[in-house]
Structures are given as C-alpha cells and as structure tokens.
Image (cartoon, rainbow, N blue to C red; front, side):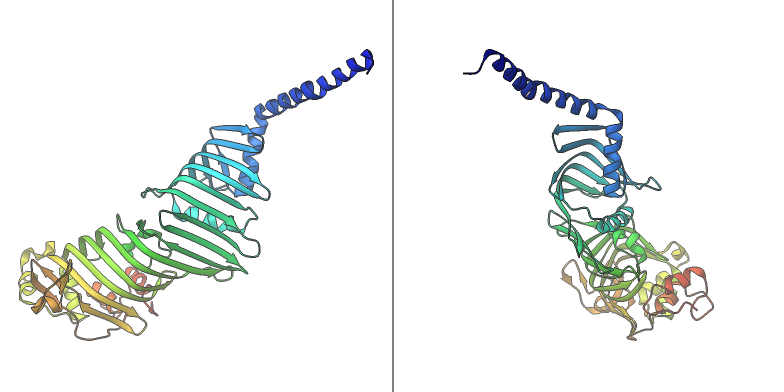
Length: 396
C-alpha cells in the first residue's frame, strides 16, 4: 500500500506522461504543419526528389507519415514548362519505397514529359503507385493506370493501364524504351524522330508497338515499329486526302532517317496535283490511263485531279523502292482488270498504273514529288530535307 503522498506523485506523473506531453506533442505537430515554412519545405523536398518544381493548392496530413496534396502542378525547374497536372496526390513512405495514389493526371506535352522521365529514371527514387486516370496530350485518358519506378543496378520505369504499356530501362549507359498501345490509339506524332511527314498530320493516331534504343554516348534513337497509323486531312506536297492509313509491317528508322519501311498505304477521297502526276510518270514510270490523260489535259485540272483511292504496297530500304498496286483491294473487296494494277482510281476508273521498274532508286521519291527542279537530285532546301530522310540518301 503506497503512501498518499506517493500516490499523488504517481498520478501527477501519469497525467503528465499520458495527457500533457501527448497534447503538447500534437499541438506542436499541428503548429508546425500550419507554419508557412512547412509547406514550402515539403514542396521543395518533393521537387528535389522528382527533379521538378512542385506547386499545389493545399497540403493535408490525414495521419502521421502520410501527406496529401490537392491541385498539384509539376513544371520543369529551369524553364517552368508544364510537365503534369494532378487533382490530388497521396504519398506514404514504405521503407525505402514511396507509395503514391494519384487522382486525375493530365500531361500536356508528351515529348517534354518523356525527357523528364528519362532524368527521373536516373534518380534513386523508388515508387509504386496508381492513378484514377491518365490523359496524354488531350488524347482519350487511360483509366486506372499503374506505374512503378524501381531497380538498383538496372533502373526501370513501367506504366500500364487498359492494355497499354510503357517501359523505360537504363543500365550501363544504355537505354531502352518500349511501348504498346493495346486497344488504345496514341498520337502518331509521338513516334520518336517523326521520319515520315504525315506522322504529324492532324488527328493522326497509331495502334501497335514501338521500341527505341540509344545510349549516353550515342543519343540518336534507333527505333522500330509495327502497327497501323491512321490520319485525317493529310497533305504531302501535291497529294492530299481526307482520310488514310499506313499499315506498318516493318518500320526501322534512326533519328529522322528511314532504314527500312514495308507496309501498305491507303488514302481516300483526295486530289493529285499536275506536278505530282507528271513526276510519278517521268520519275517512277507510272503510266497514265485514258481517264487520267483526259483529266491531265483538262484546263480545270489545276485545282487537282480527284481520286477515290490511292493505295499501294511499299518497300523502301537501301536497296531501293518497290511500289505495287493496291487498288485491287478496298475495304476487304477484291477488284480485277485495270484496278488490280492501279495505284490510283476514281469511282472505279483506273487513273495511274503501278511502276513497272522494281526496285527504283530511293531518291526517286524526291524526283517524283519535285519533278520541275533542274538537278538530278533537287538542290532546294526542301528537297535536301526530304532526301535526308531516305535510306542512305545523299544530300549533295
């Protein structure tokens, strides 16, 4: 039985330890969190880890060890260009790994974000996370996407959602990036290097797989792709079309230069200028059938000869250019007679015959699209630029 004086001291000690000190600790914690400097310090720490400038509308701490940000904005630390916006982000540390739960994420500029991601893969940050939705460049959002940044000797980043995947890996100075769109359609302009002009056409999208490899010592991307590019309102020189598609059976390029292309081009409801028809006839040997002769000699032709379909099977590499007629098939229907040998037709009437010479020199494409230039290989800036994208093309 303790003395009454001892009991009072014990009660005071228990009250101090059980009530006063925890209350003071909580109060100090709250005051610290409410201090203006805490939010700035927290955002600066996050920005250092993410190699980006982090801003938000509100900072919450729902429980110890967990931070919630509302209205998050990530920008490049030097130029201030936007990287991503997020409605909310909840971060919790799990040992050396961070776990993130993101709301709706919007990435306004995929190329800038890709460069930021390349920098992020180099950091020691290890993250597991998921987001409600991910929108890239205004395209249809990916719902319930998962992402992970992990690795030690080999650093890697993966992103997956709705059948689409993206992975970036770095080891020993070598980089590798792989992407598969799954059922989704990605903007075709995201293909690295953009070696084909119509890849940047308005509303151009790509379904398929793409891979790029490069290194710290040699930053030029060596890329491959298989799949289908679809586009609206495309125009290449004097050839224009309302809609079109390019099926890529093989597509290899380095930087902006095509190494090998094999596939099928199918354009619908367009026009061919007089210059392009002349170039395809003189440079590629495409014969003009009666209907095209009539249109070519028509004074009103300057507005362009309309076609219903411009289609061909194409192979292009260092050994040459091979073009095979594609108008013998339209929407799964096969057509014979002249259409089986035509690369352009209008309302079922054959216009241009496929080239009889195979293969043609790669620079024939430049001659066909710029036939009025005097030089064998046009010396204009536009022609040099086009020639530089062809396999082993000389710009002299």
